[in-house]
Image (cartoon, rainbow, N blue to C red; front, side, top):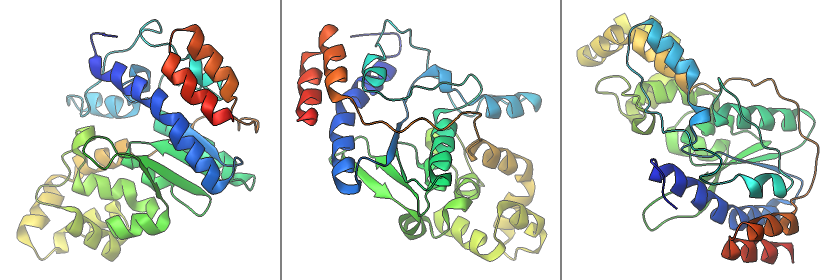
Length: 272
């Protein structure tokens, strides 16, 4: 199947094929009671409008490229609803915002959530009740790994709630965020451990002893605050979905009806 945006089609197709294996493994490890979410990479409806608005107001170009919007006929969303999953969209929200909100709602009623994503921005959601099932793409590693508060501290040297601050300072090429000039992950974590937040770092930038770093923080203050705003998840106005098991048979029937025979076989296998 081809489309003007081959990457978006590939991302969705790969997600459809990978989800049965990943979720089945997660259910075996944690039990079916945990909620799992999916972020459809390359879907234009999750364009970061919040960042675009802030940047446009300052006459800046978009920091993140937008993938073209895929028409439903390019790759139907059939297996998701057919599986009994909730499908949610938002014109002014990213998928990450929706996933983060659903996880928060689940935790609020004593539940636990698994967030299936390939975006490390979601590390900010990691808690005792929320685990990020991070999907690694490309290379030979593949698969997915669970990321909780301990893993975030091990990787970044900070607590999960400081991930947006960390991203703003270090930058994130995948999202088009350059970060502070000359600041890498080690320095970003060091500054956050010392000051506690990006705002506190910037307030104390004039006292920074390293001239190059001091200049980067002072000159980049406005942009760094915008970067943090873009990296911070927003609460979506949604309700917690009802608890329900994945309908693997229903998903298999929907896939088979559209000629996706191999996918249907994998879905049926998970139902056994």
